[in-house]
Image (cartoon, helix red, strand yellow):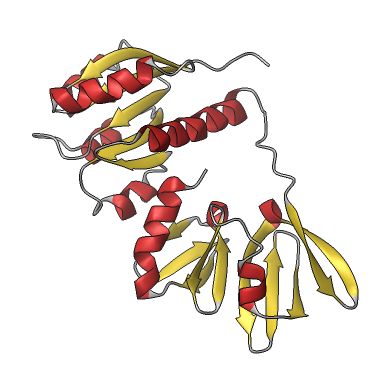
Length: 236
């Protein structure tokens, strides 16, 4: 398979912040820096003549914010938000951001975000699905049933039972949430409520009280909200 090379732009009103991101981009073999901008207006004009696949975008900038810029762009490339504030994470999720990086950026988080962008690019342009054959066995009706984790939407506690909801069906087993919580990869699944463990990849939207998976509203505990934001940001 041919290596992916994403054309990147950096948008930040701080020259020092741009410099730090530029260095990370230049050190990455799958990224090519094609433009730097110090405000949203300059970016909007520059993108008329410059094709980019991925923008590393600051949010708080003079005159127009990063969100304002995206509202004005007719054709949106992939976006990785880079900001010093965590309060915009909820809104960033509504813009289908690839990731949300908090300044100062660690190399590990940067590489994680870029990996997501590459996977999405391949899926869109090359039709290459992200392979995920991880699974667990669940004992149901005296038989061990294989449950593929990429098909599992969420798990719900029902007294002494646990309900598994997948893309195809749902079923109930006699077990505890705790017994399955330890089996599920922590970078893909999160317990957002005493009665719910959800697949982070299946979350379509959320607010301070609920998350939504396939139009199903699932309660979000107040003390789990910050965990959810962090997990979504780091989720591969």
